[in-house]
Image (cartoon, rainbow, N blue to C red):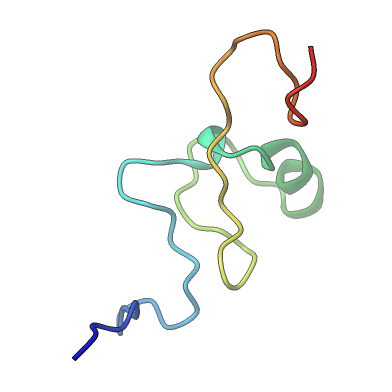
Length: 66
């Protein structure tokens, strides 16, 4: 039987992955403007969480273009 990806302590799936903060997400600027989040927050106001890891500084933008 397949295990479901569901945490009964987080039914709305708004927690960020372990060890991650809003500052690690590509959406931090938008969430700071809309929700007043800070880089140290660990809970997403979108349900389910829309956390996407920000890419490391490598000279590319979010679209992969330089």
